[in-house]
Image (tube, rainbow over all chains, first blue to last red; front, side, top):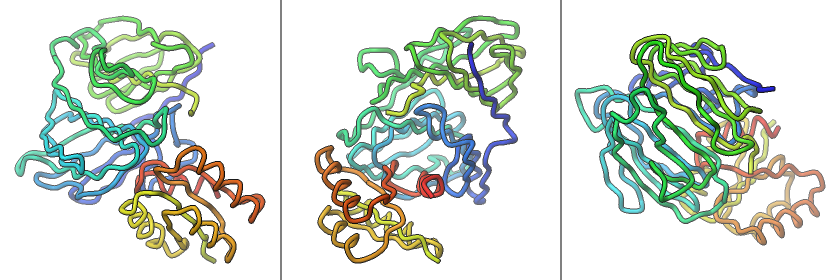
Length: 240
Length: 97
């Protein structure tokens, strides 16, 4: 029998720093909710809006798989591995922090708001060599389809990370129905609604709601509105 | 009363950041070192409420460190710190205590 947990948009942690308006699906920084610590190895899901030209100065990370998905605008990234890049909507960035890496992240545009999802997963191996990658995604391929954008395999579609996790993005027409099969036994799926309204396993979800489902091998999906957009995070439920 | 937190990590930059973060909260006192020997020495000298294991500590070194710290302070809470900064720190400490 499948189990689920529903996180409505307005129950997320919220921190407005002026230049940064952040919503946290799980405990992060000063937002602490013992009921919202993680979903399997998914530890952080931050929905950040950053004012033009503003951002995070150089700061370190270690032992975490960090995935950034810009939803609107562009982010300027620089890190201690020598990478300097701009990542915009339609692209995905991944950083395996491993033994330690420093980076800065700024809104690349002075006159445009940046909205991004930043997602942290516990790695399946500690102290790996830090690495960075980014990819441009074929946005058309996610029309009425869950397009794989991340996996554990370097040769597979999307970016890869040090974890048995698969991410998929889809954008759907109203009324479109499908089923998503979980990639690995023991994994669960955390669905995050980027836009529109959808129904997953009978649960109606609105914009920025999250639903975690586990103890199952698939989930049912229906788009209730036009341009419904959903991120699926298929992750191990057991911490390594 | 302050909660005394001992952090051990091999990266000097991250260790400095952790020192700043842990000591920024008046309710916490952070002691941050890079070497096992320094951590053991501190543990011999004073009470510790929580140990955070940071980056770069290999499996063998971690096992040895845990054994020595627990021999000095049976029941001492030792947890892994992930992320190397402020994002997860507060939640980790609150959950452990």
